[in-house]
Image (cartoon, rainbow over all chains, first blue to last red; front, side):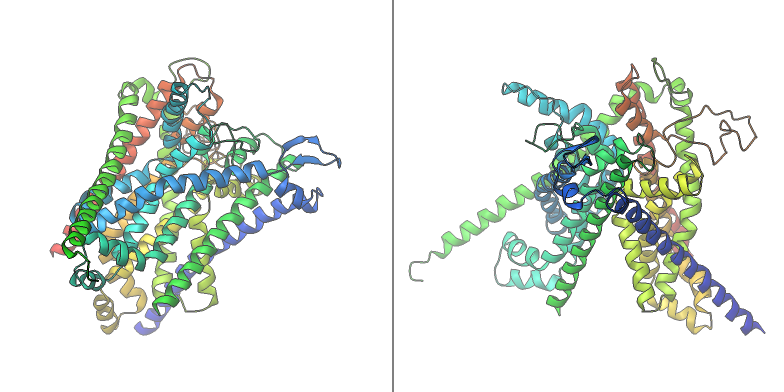
Length: 305
Length: 305
């Protein structure tokens, strides 16, 4: 009798926990399906050409183009999103790798006790607060620095956004890099030291090399975060929907246009449909980033045998 | 090899090593200084408002000075609690299933991929899905409950990873001992694994609460951007001024910062944004410290017997 009850509890437990994960999976599938469904409507229902959406350089949905279609070239936002992502990664990378090496190789005790908890705090600062700092400090700095060199600019633009994003993705890349470096077996380092190598030679030739695939993963996860960040970027990029002509002129990204526009347009209008296409593009890019991470993971696993 | 000067080579690599170490220490110091500067700047800039009771409890103003953040403060905490009430059990179930029961098959792979996808989705996309599905399709309107579900989707991947890790970090021998005593898997999980993993789980949940508290992008299209004046004596659960009504719109602190800055009509905009950011920052700091204190306390209690 007791055994029967045990078996029943076991079945119920398994069923309930299984239902939890099924619900989560179902939500994600619904999300992808619904966003894709709305995003594709632009091309199926409204008849907008996919090519002119992806490659068009003019965004003005309330005006018709030569073919009598709304002008919805998304290239300015696509270019803006990629520029801020790449530039911010470029800014954050040396600092993230440098502090990860410091934590793992130079001062492990201090790193674990002090540096990593501080890093966690940096992750926890809300993105709007970063946006506010960007708006009140970084934009003003950029404007003043340009003013000192005799240039008059607003300070809003890709450069300022990239600086804000670099601060935001720094903890992500750093803590994943710390994990990557810490996973390098200790014997590798000892082998290198036994050959008479200095610490830096060991780091450069042995540790960084064997951690390379995981470090790549860290960088791409950082880029994923930068690409998808919405509010902080929207606050400092200047929100001018035009092809980016320089680092210091106002521009816009997929996320900034979405946050600005979605509230203003009624459901079912062409403008609204096109906004959903931008959301779909954003979704597709995150899926691409995940796929790249998987590819790196498989390659790394194959190499290690 | 004849003219290879060994001592010069050793001098050179030693110098390289010293320079590299100095650079690494410099980078780490730079990161810590930057973090300190950010936190101190936010707290100092918002200090005048931080201890101003009228600001903390007053209602926001749209066109004149002296607005408060009373409803926003309440909304942030209410939304956080609702989100945790939904996301903690769900993530616990999902994590238990993944670590204890998940068969090695295609369905498990799909579920794991779904959670991974969710973790790298931009929060603005999660917010837009929430808008489409919960606000419009389910007809909940801009509401606390729609916001809580969107935040749940944002929180689940973080929590599942933390809980799964905590369960897997329990020494294998404890689990084997439970199973060898004739306990079922479910009983082992509930009575052996969960208590042992509890410190790590609680720390993870409180840290995730800090993230949820500062999230804004997922909320602007779900919980909405308006804060009805709340009447705490109101017990009519369908009234928009009843604080507990989950179907009323609710602007949070983070959304408030974003909204007043993007509208830009409040005369004392800088003071209000800085004050709100300081309140957010204090809460995030409190969550971080709390997470560590509770984790340490539970660990001591559970391991002292």
